[in-house]
Image 1 (cartoon, rainbow, N blue to C red):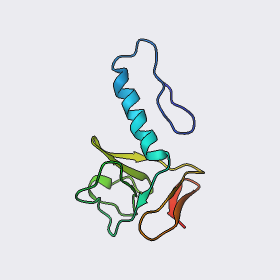
Image 2: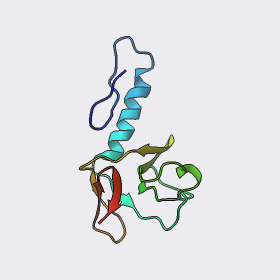
Image 3: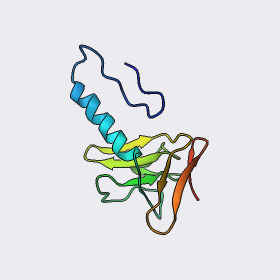
Image 4: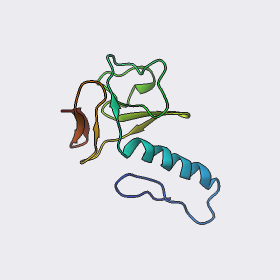
Length: 111
């Protein structure tokens, strides 16, 4: 199976079993990437009660469910955390005090 070159959304293939799972996963990824609103976090651990659709920038030294995903965009859904590697040009507003966040190379940074 191959993916789209930019957002890495999976293509469906002929005769593929459980296409709905692949399609639904792609929709979850699109939901996080299209006009993301990044929430601020005060610590290095994920929030205790995230809401579906919330996004965060995984900080350096992340622990718990974010461990090993530093610099990624973390998006919470009914299936748990999804981590998206940033790419050049990914931008979105930052909720709570900052104007926006942007990508420099392959790292997400606030500006």
